[in-house]
Length: 308
Image (tube, rainbow, N blue to C red; front, side, top):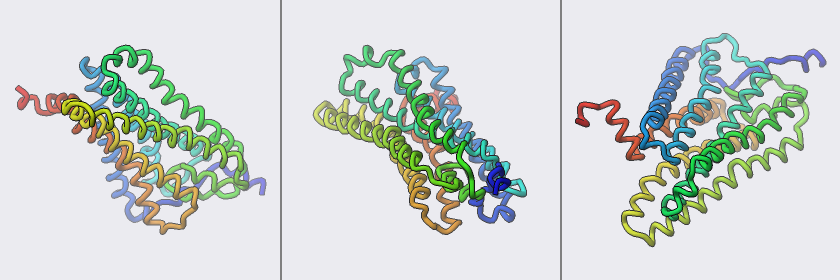
């Protein structure tokens, strides 16, 4: 038994027909990964080089898109290696690190969206106070807290899990998420309770704040002029679409593990891919098409002749 407990490599058993379709999987995921990096990095580049995009809203968008790149880089390189490898394995320490980065970055997205909602609220509902409230210092504090608070929260279960004894060395998935708790000999009551607290702090409370903020924006916009309503729709709709998309994926990730649902392997595999496929591509598409100033700079970048 002692020898078993000293095993440090985990088998990832969530892959379907990997020996048969390994090169097809590799080609699709490699293409998606390159698209994620290029699409997100392009918009971040435009925000950095154009001074008229150096506003809080666009700074938060840039942070959100950088999150997509880091989020994907935590998952995709290991996936690509697994597709061409004979065995799909990962060391337990690397699994804990992937778990930590995956949930830290994922949680920071809710806090960034909450900061963006507050920015929109001040801009639309308190326009005269906007320069005073949304100063560079305020934006910097929001960014730091959006990354630091989730990291501190997720560090606790990551450290506890790193010290836990393992009795199972097969992970039902293709990357390390909450399923790592199923590897442990004894399910920690502390982690269960702490997980609920972290879920409330990092997801539910920010979502409630966002809903409250956009409700206030909707009420005030409805009472205001047509121009204010148009501005609210143009700047708030992309954020709401991103929030809805990300919330649905997070709900699936939590539900599938917590309820230990016995879905067919192929369905679990496809649904897990949704978490890492759509969202990192959805963000730059939404912001690139729906945010007028970003869309304008994208057209100038890729179609300069038409803009003359």
